[in-house]
Amino acid sequence: DDEKAGYKASIAAALKAHDAVLVAHYYTDPLLQELAEETGGCVSDSLEMARFGKNHPASTLVVAGVRFMGETAKILSPEKRVLMPTLEATCSLDIGCPADEFAAFCDQHPDRTVVVYANTSAAVKARADWVVTSSCALPIVESLMDKGEKILWAPDKHLGDYIQRQTGADMLLWDGACIVHEEFKAQALIDLKAVYPEAAVLVHPESPAAVVELADVVGSTSQLIRATQELPNPTFIVATDKGIFYKMQQAAPGRRLIDAPTAGDGATCRSCANCPWMAMNTLPRMLQSLEQGTNEILVPEDLIPQAVRPLQRMLDFTA
Ligand code: 13P
Ligand code: SF4
Image 1 (cartoon, rainbow, N blue to C red):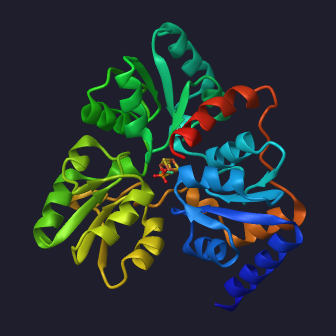
Image 2: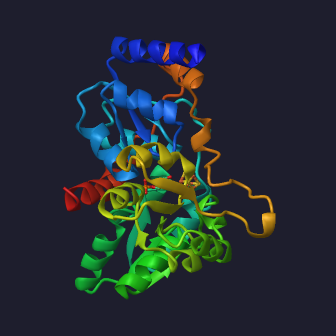
């Protein structure tokens, strides 16, 4: 409608005026994803958001996503200004892995290579040997295993468990979870598959093992979108945040996309496959941040040299 179009035009103008580029995650409001596409920014998974932000010449990065994505952008480009529509958008994985408890856990296992998921604070990254995202965790763990390394993994236990089962690596897992993916229900998914036998099931590996087992494809957001282009199925049942449907429908026009069930027996769901923190990214908040320079992401300077090392390793590995 007119109000939204007005906001989009104002943000596009403010991006230009402030030499800024918009970097959005697939789980954000489709309006923000559209705006990123229309203004020369990027819409992508967390790995490619990091790479795009680092390589783009703009002096200000506006990150639409959750806080760890803004922090990653800042760590990789400390000379750039990084703004977010809100500083309150956190992540249950980040919350569930406080830096002091994590450091104590690492201290207890000095023989293990520390691999952390990107969904963590700068202080946790600073303690890691490697940072990974869901699109590169498997090959990175495989390569470490080939070198005989034992791994300490944090924070997502479902992703860690999936990688452990795929690779057979020796992995000690932190006990964290994503509140969105944790709600997908295996039995309800089995019932839904029976209704749509022509469907392929696409699952993000932050989901519980019983759900992952039912998948035709397990992968990061970008890998799941790619799967809709590669598979011939007319229908896809998708177990990840609903925000992904915007790009997935673009990638697979004419195919039917169905959300995987989040709660059996008609029970109410907590997140209903929509991350409450991603949803805090709104057009008015983005405009305000850009116009007033508020919500700037700052990472303590002493953390940056340590945190950038495992992030840069990830970018080099996947280059
Ligand atoms: P990817 O986009 O890297 O698959 O990340 C998923 C995620 O949960 C981000 O919040
Ligand atoms: Fe964190 Fe899950 Fe939200 Fe991603 S979807 S930001 S992993 S809570």
